[in-house]
Each structure stands twice: as structure tokens, then as C-alpha cells.
Amino acid sequence: MVGGVASGLADHLGANVLWVRAAFALLAACAGAGLLAYAMLWVFVPQESLTAQEHRPSPKERQQAFGLIAVGISLAVALGTLSGAVSTWVAVPVGVALVGTAVVWREADAAQRRRWVDGARSGMSGALLGGGGRSAILRVLTGALLVAAGIAVVLLRSGTMGQLQLALAAVVATLVGVAVLTVPWWLRLVRDLGDERRARIRTEERAEIAAHLHDSVLQTLALIQKQPDVSREVLRLARGQERQLRGWLYGPDGYGARDGVPGPTALSQAVAEICGEIEDRFAIVVRPVVVGDSPMDKDLAALVQATREAAVNAAKHSGAAEISVYAEVEAENVTVFVRDRGKGFDEDEVSPDRHGLADSIRGRMDRHGGTVRLRTTIGEGTEVQLTMPRTAVGARSGS
Amino acid sequence: MADNKPVRVYLVDDHALFRAGVRAELDALTDDVEVVGEAGSVAEAVVGIGHAKPDVVLLDVHMPDGGGAEVLRRLRPDLPDVVFLALSVSDAAEDVIAVIRAGARGYVTKTISSRELVTAIARVAVGDAVFSPRLAGFVLDAFADRPGAAPISDPDLDLLTPRERDVLRLLARGYAYKEIASELFISVKTVETHVSSVLRKTQLSNRYELSRWATDRRLV
Image 1 (tube, rainbow over the protein chains, first blue to last red):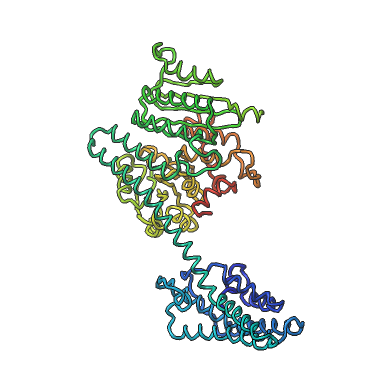
Image 2 (cartoon, rainbow over the protein chains, first blue to last red; image 1 turned 60 degrees about the horizontal axis):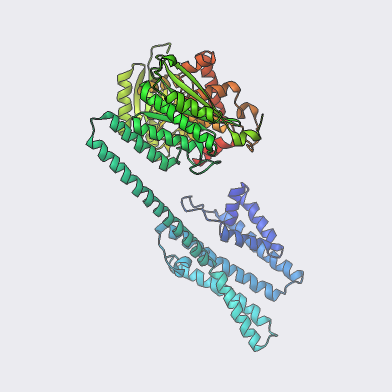
């Protein structure tokens, strides 16, 4: 009813509003804890923006709420007085001051909502009044007056102070009053600053990405227009551009952000790089799939080079339009499969002057303790399986 | 397909050019697939699919007003018989896992050849699942036993059997179902059963990686 805290809380907890309000009223009796809690929640819990439809309380609900507020405040005052902690002359004006604060804050809240509607930005008067017109001004003034009156009564009644003390106390009290009344405004200042900074960062980021992407996409499109008849070249350009875009959108290996091994030293990224390179060189499609990941070391670098060699062979000789590269990192081994659905070959008939398979793949893998398995069937394609033991990690998890 | 009725397909994609391309390719390639309608937005799709009652919906993942996942959320409860096959340029984990968990029976990327697309449509139409190599890789990754992984709350859903793992590995290596069957000495039907079972686990498991990828797209 005042700040909408109770109904918000009730929504969140799935409880009846009435119970929440009653709880606040009861808590208020405990040396004002309920009031403090209410004020804190009001200040710090972000408001639902106005897309949510406004809930108009029924007259009965309104009555109940006002009743509970009255009960809460009077309970707080009465208990405070009875327990003798504070005298009636302090408690009643403090209650009055609290009511005044509530009135001003509520007005600021309404102003906030109006601000969302017309999106205006204004200073302090805007924060408190927000174009609410004469009645808003009236309400704010009433609230301020109530606060001032409360403070004044407390000061005057405490009487026994000397002139100087009284003046000092009055100044302090006024400052406190002003500080409390302007809380909504301070909050707004802080939030606006945060919002503005976020917006600026977002814009800058977008501009940077746009500049980079538009430039390279335009270039690719220009190149494609120049040589529309060379279909291999068009395919190569398109795949290259696609890879670059994917890199920007989903990270270097196209998987999006992932936990584990970041940076350019990860196996997944090295595999993605050689696949991209082969796509560019031979104008075919190379699809890498990497399961698990591992930081690169000398052995894995050799494995990646052997993978590259196997994929190059497939690109050159198989006649297939697409090559699948699958790498899996396990506890002891890293295994890579390079597969094509091309024409396959008979291993015995490979002419001895072609060293690709013998040296670059078998030799390299042997030197680092890895193994090579080759499966090829004429007419159905070829698959090269490369297995490399993981030295660093494999020693640790020996099963 | 045993009966000769064509599979009725509905296209949902915000790029009209792409819809026209797919339609032309499907029309030219086969009589087993008949395109019965298309939509360019989530709202259009929800209405159109409700009217056309197609067998299979080819669903784009990224659309301005909510995307494929939104279509799935709105239609799945009312139309449990309509099968959704996600078709997207993106193969980022968040996108793939998100639509699968929202109820799609398969995921293929737009670079797929028309012939493979027809096979995929036929496969989901009879209730099987379709995994792209990338999706198979993600699922293997998500179900991997790595140190420090969250404890298994439901072994039936949170673990893959060794056989399912074998099948997924071959899928990730680019094998077709028939090739997987001969590689593992099992029937194609058994391969299909394994893949369907993996799909079910991917959709229902509470494994951290899966729910993380899904929540990245504000789903589930």
C-alpha cells in the first residue's frame, strides 16, 4: 500500500498479502524492526518495471492495510513507551516523522513509474515530483513538513540543552531529515550511472564487432562477385567467411565459451585451425568435432601435424567433397579419426615416391610413441586413426 | 517408408530466400516429401502448424520473436504428434542443446546436402532421432566422466551405456546409420534404438553441462 513491498514479498513467497502485512506490523512492535526491514526492502529491492499490470487494491484491502499500518506504528510507539526505553514525547514525533518520510518516498516511487512512462530524465525535482502536478508537490511538502515537525518537537521537548547545543542538534537533525528524504534521489543517481555505463560498453562492443565483420563480409562478397563462375573459388571464399563469422560468434573452435582449457594452446583450437587451413587450400569442407580438450604439448603438436597430413592426403587424393575430423581426449590417450567417403586406395599399390603416409604420418607418430591405423576400401573411402598417449596426464591417472 | 504417402513437411524460417530454396530442393529431389506450408515468424508458425497439422516441422533456431524454442514451447503440449527437426546455421552448443531439450527430435545444420536432409526428415517422421556429428560430440562431452563432475542423481538418465557411447562416437566421426550398423555388427534398427535412447537422456537428464547449455539460452 505504501511502497508495495508487502505485496511484492507476498508474490515472491507465494503467501497472502494480508499475512505479510500483519507480520510487518508485529515486527514493527519489536523496537521498530519491522519498519526498518520495510524501509530497507523498499530501498534495495529493484522495482518491477511497469510492463506488469498495475494492481488496483480493493477498498476492503485498502482499509485492512491502513489498519495494519496504524496498528504497527502504534504498537511500536506503545511498546517503546511502556518499556520505558523512550518517552512518549520522543516516540510520537518519531512516528510522525516516519509517516512523513513514507509519504515523500511514495511520491518518489510514483514519480519513478511516471518517468518510465515518458522516459524523461530530470534532476532532483524530477526524482521527487516527476511531473505529477500540483497534488504531487502538495504531498511531498506535507511529507517534508511532517518530518520537520517530528524532529522539531523532539528537539524542543528535550529542553534541558543550552543554546549552542540546541543549535547544533537542530543542524544535525535537519541534515538527517534531508538525507532521509532524498534517499530516492541518491539511489536513482547511482542506478542511472550504472545503467549508462552498461549501455556505453554495449554500444562500443557492438560497434567494434560490426566494423570488423562488415568489412570482411563486404570483401568476401566483392571477391565472389568478381569470379562467380569459378565455383571452387566461391565455395572456398564462402567457407572461409563462414569460419571467420563462427569464430567471432562462438569462439575460436566454434563451440562457444567452454570451461577447462582456454587460450590458443588448446587442442580443440589447434584442430580447428588446421581444418580451416585445409578448407582454404583445397576448397573442400572439413568438419572438426572435438570431444573433451587438453592443453597442447610436444606430442599433441605432432598429433595435430599428423592429422593435418592425413586430411591433406584425403583432400588431394580421395575426391571426396567433405572430410570428417573427430578428436577425442580421454584419460590416457588422445585419438583422432580423419575420414573421407572418397575413392579409397590399395595401400600396397601406393607408389614408393609418395612419402606422405610413410614419413609425415607414421614416422611422426612413431617418434612420439603414437600409433597409426589405416582402413581403406576401394570405392568406400579411407579412415586414418591416430592415437597418442598423453604423457603428462596419462602418468597420473594410470588405470 | 512402408506406405507411399509422402511426409507432410512445414517450413519455419525467417529468411524467405532460405525457405524457397529448401522447398525447391525438396520438390525437385523426391516425391516422398511434400511441403504443406511455411511461416516466417513464431506467431505465424504457431497458427499455421495448428491448421496444417504436418508430420514434420523444419524449424529454424534463430528468429526475431523468440526462435525455434519458443515455437516448441507453444506447440508441443497441444500437438504431441507433430515432430520437430531443428535446422540452423548455428551449431553452437547452447543452440543445439537448447532446442533438443525443448523437444526437437533432431538437429541438422543448414549446410547439410538436400539428400541428407530428405533422409533426416524420413527418419524423424517415423520417430527416430537425428544427430549431426557436432551434436553427437556435444552429447559425448556432456556425458563424459570427468573428475569433479556433479554426482549422478539418476543413473538411468545421467549415464550413457558403453554401446550408446560407441554409436555416438561413430556418429561424431561422420558415419551414417548403415555404416555404424556394419561397423558394430548390429542392425540399423538397433542403431536407431540407441540413438533414440540417447536423445531421451539428452532431453531429460539433469547433468550440469546439459542444463547449463540450456539455461544459457534461458530455457528449461
